[in-house]
Image (cartoon, rainbow, N blue to C red; front, side, top):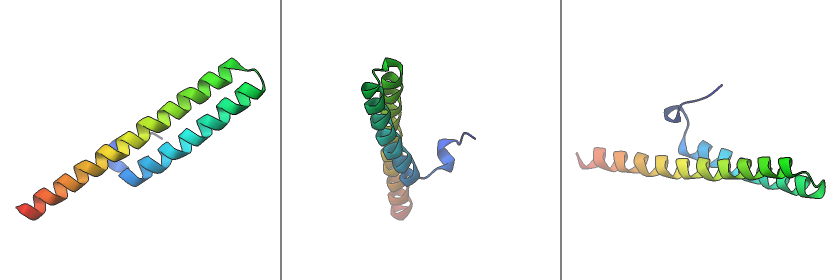
Length: 74
């Protein structure tokens, strides 16, 4: 089930991102050990997905802080 970014917290995005990064690195290592270039490529893609998820979490956190600050200043 896909979730829109509004329904996930910045923390959960960062956690998912970290998990995907490590899973991708592990997949790359297995692919290298098995001389399986397709598996290595999938691992690289999964690791990149993790980086994007973490960046998404960072952006959401900044937006949440800015909105919170704006509400306090109002």
